[in-house]
Image 1: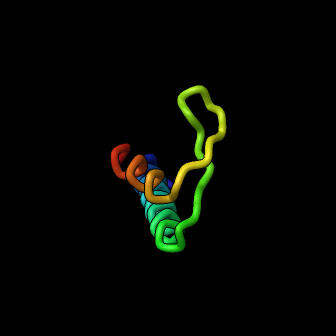
Image 2 (image 1 turned 90 degrees about the vertical axis):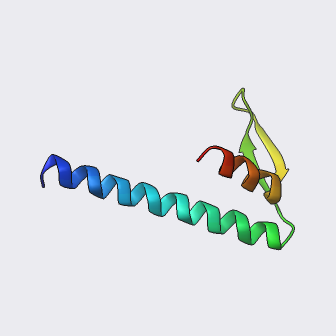
Length: 60
């Protein structure tokens, strides 16, 4: 596999992960669930899925 093919493969994998995370957050938001994320210090915190989705969208 050439280097260019590897780059394309890794990009497709990354896009798949991003898509799956977005779908998961949207589903949890519809159900009114919370998710656990890390704060700036790496400590786990609970937030609503709606807030997590807002954070997710700003980081893309």
